[in-house]
Figure 1 (cartoon, rainbow, N blue to C red):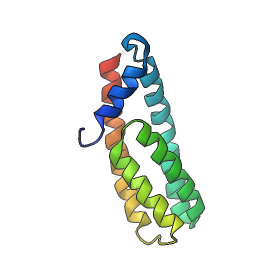
Figure 2 (cartoon, rainbow, N blue to C red; figure 1 turned 30 degrees about the vertical axis):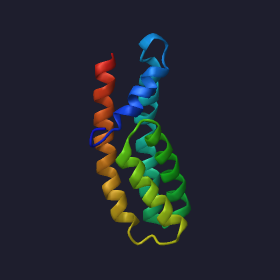
Figure 3 (cartoon, rainbow, N blue to C red; figure 1 turned 45 degrees about the vertical axis):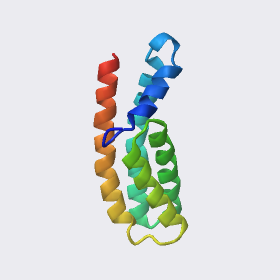
Length: 119
């Protein structure tokens, strides 16, 4: 495991492909890279408007997709945000979202690196 990605997850996804063809993994990474910024925007908009249900839904969705690709810090941040919203203890959510923003950038960079090695 690296600091940003659990490479065991990446290796497992590669093992699922036919004869080492990385197409499935590349497709999953591309979908994540396209979707994650939208989820982050939804979290930030929800925080700005006090729509904690929106924040919770977006964090839940991003947590799942991050976990599927081994983006451990993003997954942990989203879990913390989701649980805070569910528990109506949202005072730390804005600062958690700032940490999430950095971890998301780190994960995106790492996943782009993985994709670059696969192509």
